[in-house]
Image (cartoon, rainbow over all chains, first blue to last red; front, side):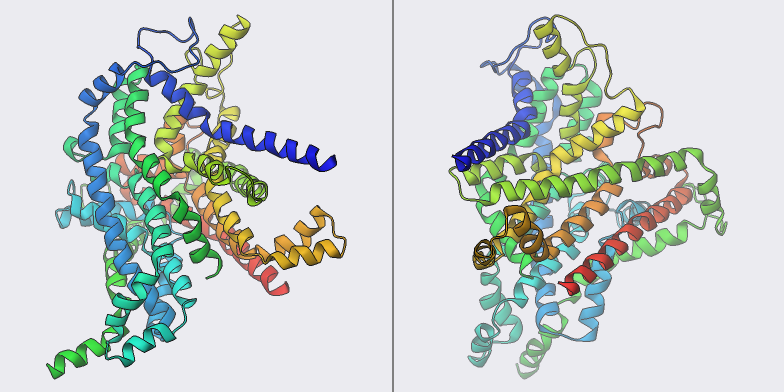
Length: 274
Length: 293
């Protein structure tokens, strides 16, 4: 009997915290699907309608289509560079144990503690010098760099747990060590790669602190910038704002839901066993 | 051909170099230059003059900066412990097998997927006075308007920001703890049960000691993240009312835009030390615990 009471209480708590997590999404949906003529303090609406005009109007005036394209280009570029460079570096840290590798790794790990904002000003002058303001490629390089230390940390932990015999067999068969890394080791890194892609992909997708400095041109704005600009201009029009936010967060939400099953596996592989 | 093979066979010694090179250009070089700038009166336009430690002396006389230090530390003192406590409790709750486990985990993680800036704007709509969702809800249910502004009251606003931040990122902390819980061998708990240990005793003497690694990751990332808080405050209060909820990161950005570039980098270096001290202490403490156990 006591066991059932506990189970029931647990169920109630789980339902409560899930509803709590979904609450703002629910409010957002109600807002976005309600005509802007409806005032909430006069008439409370608890279920979303099938009203799409807010989405159409928000799409037209916010340039969010362009922003989604910019965010996609930057995220895909930065994550790709990040995965290639950090998996190689992680291999070096885990397998080629010499002083240089160790020192370089420790320097990068130490830099994780430094708030990005210290770099922003000199980075800004550097970006002007190399012509990187308002370009995709420079933003890709900056954001790929920021997430390098954490990725290398995850990769080196994971690679340390893979038995050496697997690559040694390939080397005996005449493969160079770097060849063995790309042909034999890299395909084994799928779980940790998916964690790196999700964690870094999200933080790059949501980046605001660097984007606000380096992407100033209207046509280069990413989603967070476009939404915040939209908020400043149309802040009073909540229904439009909600529709724009829903469009803006849809790609991240869908991608996460599709890949979530690799997520916990990858984190376990990289952070705990390492 | 011979030479090419020789080069390829040595390449693995340099595999960390591409990453380190990129990191040097876009992180270490600007960092060193930033440290240099903090000793000047650079305004972003005209030539910088060396002023020694004047910016740092100025900082300790700057009332707004001192207030922002207080706000930043207060935010972190609320946010980092709450994230860890709730993240751990959530993980304990969701570690057992039940129907729909993975759906519930996805739902709880979902807020952390979204930009804190956008999430902040959504909460602003829910909480704002007169037109906000909660106000309308209370008004239409009870018929009375609740005349109270959560975000306009400076001592209240900072805690509202803390709660929104904890709400958003508890899922992220939970996932790391869940990973840790799954790495604990089942036999340990079974042995504990046979020895007659209660649930709380098993958590204290079996689970916690095995969780030092994930605790380390969570405590340190939460300290760093909380002390660098930025977007969520911009969206919820924009630092207001007045400067009462402005964090140090926001102040640095505003000073930097406001042509006090040299000064803003000096403040950023102070922020680095504000982050470094608690990270170092908790790192040492948790490492010691790890050895003891």
